Length: 83
Image 1 (cartoon, rainbow, N blue to C red):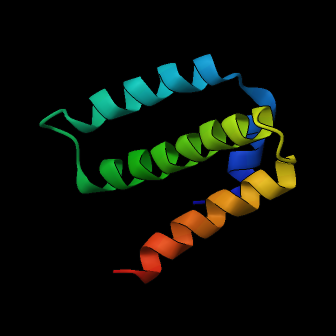
Image 2: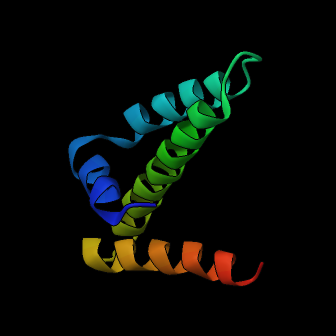
Image 3: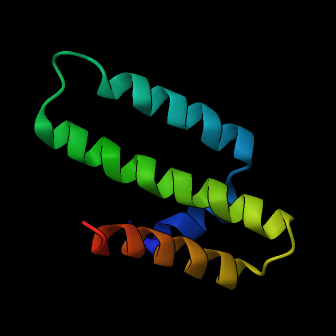
């Protein structure tokens, strides 16, 4: 998860484009010939895209961009701490 990338995706892409890209990356991840390195890159991109989608949703519901980014970051960090 990289907040600057999530911010860039949020600012430059609409939710529909992000959803389409997410579908492609998820399909790519299921191919048999995909290496672990490829999966790591795709996983990082998927996380960042999901973050941008969540920021879009939170901003639409009245949150500021900064707060929405922080909420997503805390959610991810909180899930890591639980493991």
